[in-house]
Amino acid sequence: MADEVQNVEGAVETTENTGAPRRGRGGRDGGRGGRDGGRGRRDDRRPRDEDGGEELIEKLVHINRVSKTVKGGKRFGFAALVVVGDGKGRAGFGHGKAREVPEAISKATAAAKKAMIRVPLRDGRTLHHDGRGHFGAGKVTVRSAPAGTGIIAGGPMRAVFESLGVADVVTKSVGTSNPYNMIRATFEALGEQTSPKSVAQRRGKKVSDLIKRGGAADRVAEAEAAAVTE
Image 1 (cartoon, helix red, strand yellow):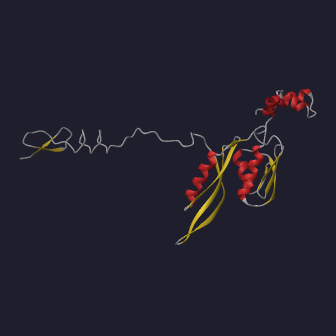
Image 2: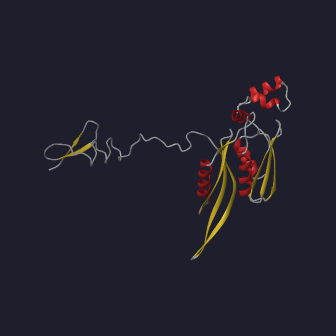
Image 3: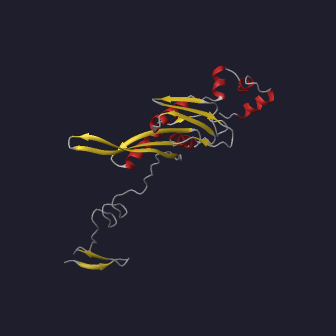
């Protein structure tokens, strides 16, 4: 016959005729399956950081509704074009398709993070030299600008330079207004950007020697060469 006894903490436990207290199911201290009264879940798991602690600027450039014809009719979805950058000279673009808008944006963002490129910047604010890009029917021209000019660009190109960290630039787009072609042409122009340091290393010369050939004086050339960071 079972009796009820009161333990030290005031809880009522049921004992058999042998007088031993009955434990909980599967638990060492009366819990259900857990070592410390939990449900077997570990609380010391480390949170996963997908970006490695790096903060990126994400820009949604374009989103379009697409359809696919199947046997039963049409299946609608969404296509997203996203540009990401760290604001310090690295940027990339990607596109993704999904049945829902948030999923399409997440796919495009993941693709953009994998395709980021490094663009050397002058004084951390503008491009080193002019450039041209061409893709399909789109043609773009990018030019360096003095301080205070701002971003003279429209549409998808503005999103690229804002995520890249460029503060002063002048651009021109001729041909198509398709955002996909404009973005690809812009990244083609940015991919051709070179810095004075890379050119000097490739030619086996000093940065000041390259600046002197532009007609600058010796002191001015040396000062400009010392100011070049990349």
